[in-house]
Length: 127
Length: 163
Image 1: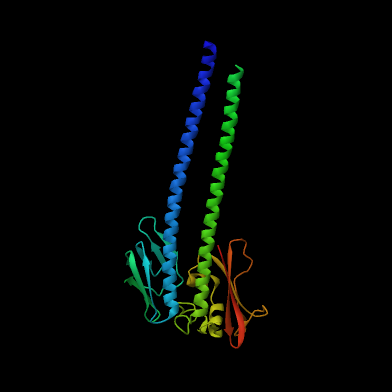
Image 2 (image 1 turned 180 degrees about the horizontal axis):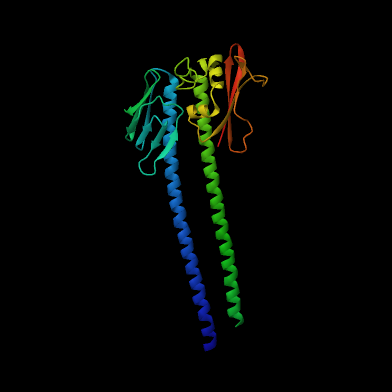
């Protein structure tokens, strides 16, 4: 009886140890994947917001002089006319390009935006 | 002894099955992430191509009578969806990289042409309206076709964009 107990005990220790390490490994992977999902979700949201603004800017430009479009954004927006770039967000900002540079440079806060076409030049401001 | 050995064998098999399942799940996850990224990039590329063709067929360009030295915005029409031969000719006189710069697609490659309804290339001031090389070595490509008028002729403006 004593011999049998002694033989079983290391197996138990080994199995519990193995299970514990596997558990730690899975926990690590789960944590990493959770971080990845959060990062991707944020990127997707910011990118959609950026594309929405780019679309509004292009529609305003193509609409011709006098066109005005209102939109709403949930993040801060920067427009860099020379680089034809719109960026959305502060930390980990996401950018998207537009094919025109006839737009004002702007740093806009979240909320309502209004883009106006004034003689084929798009002016975007908080409205 | 026999019971103890059986228990170890059970554990070994169960651990192997578990590790196999875990590796499978991680692999599927990674494949899904790659597909998600590809889908995201493809949609962005498509949106970019649509925006560029919008600009080409719905805008007269800036200045209205632009040429390769004065162009600020490349629009190819004299009015909505009616192509202007002078602007097509001006575009043909630009270099491939110059056009990419104007369209803000430096990281992409493109192919552009205007064909009639039978698929034959049209000419602008004696030059065939075709820019770039159609043989893209990628599956990641977007093709946009826009119906236009060129003089009295019905035409199709085709624009291919890839990374």
